Image (cartoon, rainbow, N blue to C red; front, side, top):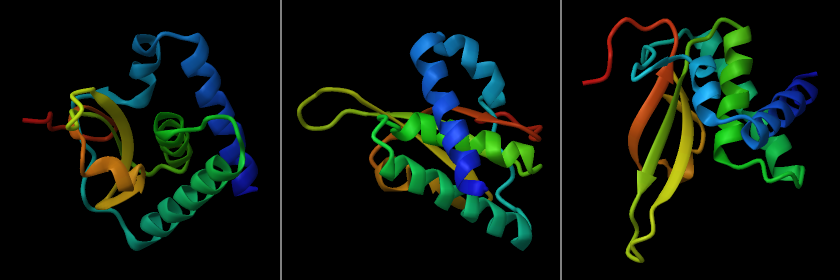
Length: 137
């Protein structure tokens, strides 16, 4: 069932990104420029890792161009349904060829759930989280 849910959220995320301006999507990702807690329970971490596995499994096997942002959005919404706080980050990088690249990743607790590989080469420029009182510095 988790794989089916991941497929539906990924398809919904991809459709939104194709049809709706991001500025209308952003408020549904959480409060801008905030982060969720770095501490979650062991049970929440296990659920988050299963959600991460499901989203990445579907994204890797369905040829719909389900890249980093739809994956992060789908996993975020799946975690939100389960009451687990997470932070979606948007970042940019300027590699040697001087072309900017964008990347999105999702964190719950201290674990990067989606977009882990490319995260290190991208500087965060925006974040979206729920259940968090403190803005980013």
